[in-house]
Image (cartoon, rainbow, N blue to C red; front, side, top):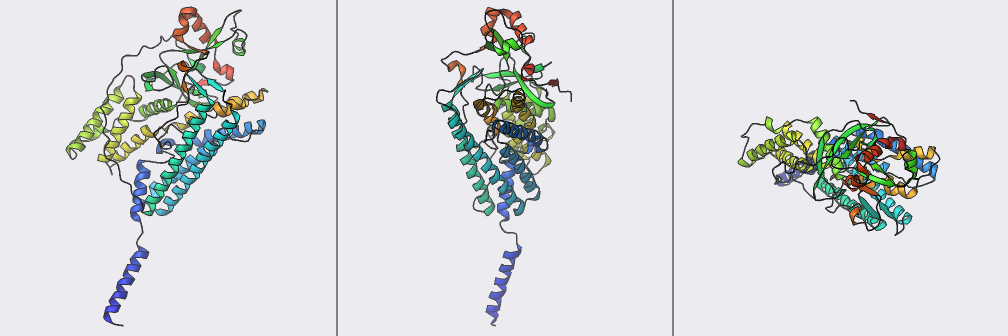
Length: 496
């Protein structure tokens, strides 16, 4: 063989050997690692599935028990989807630890399985409610009202979000193949935190309704929600925890007013509590933050995240010595120090400032990337942004299928419409509140404010009733009506 040909053959063999032995598409794995770390899909790292799987298992038992005893076919709660979220969480953690193609493919497969269950659950519920409801159906709660058209519109928007998730999964597949790339975003331009509210007018403690056996109420938080009378303003809530049938739950109570439901003198509830007058009506306190009353629950998850955050963390920016780099980097750390000081010392922590603090943490992560402090800042940012901490408590707090089981044991057959419209709690059970799942800009409305409702409402605020009935009568109704007795559940103080 001629020397020239030998050189060509040798070069070819070297290239072939490199192609065989060198790990191909290492850049794809690195990019997928970065997006998974900074923008997890379906499950965020604070979700704690070791705690979450227990209430999911109990909800599955109750769901299957109710279906068996009623003859219904469709799941009330998308339990398979909720379980698949924990499988995604496990796969994401494994990929972030191993950072190789095998665990990358395993994670992408977990995404696809979760997506199929998410999409099919939404479409099944939409079909069920479209068949079950009629155009004149109307659901009026303490603060909202919903029609069939509104409910179906919400579910169609959820189906649109499913399409977006499908595209996101394909994008991440393309990243692994090297067809697409991902880079960290630039620092977020964020406003300064400030105590920008007037001192709220809180109810007197002796007038405040303490729902479901609560002996004391905890920290006050502020958040914005469409649930109450002025969606443009901040509302104020007490947060407290207790045990409901032995399971930890997280509760909120509006700090500025009570709501009451109107009942006739011969109504079942008035007779049950033995407060039926000879004539006239009784007004029984209603827990206005019960998410069956208002489905717009983003504020609820934000407040729970704030409560867990303040119990779990201390300031971190103040431990970083300035200067560390460029003027921009020094400014980011300096701004972060001020943001933490204000939030951690705030008399009434606010959802607005909490979200801004999350932006400061992301900026700090970009500056401190690759250090323990940077990783901790990213962890805090994701907890604030994705609102998945304490999910086990929220399942115990928001899906009360045990009440249906109790009713069945007492010979009371459930209302099928109530099961799938209300008890399914689809805004929470499909995790619409979390950016880890909700990927489109438009959000469901979950009905309209009840003050736009043209018919008669059976719900009233404290100020609506005080002049006619007086403080003593309203206090009496509050003291006489323990809803845990009505629902036959045991409420106890959480001691640890």
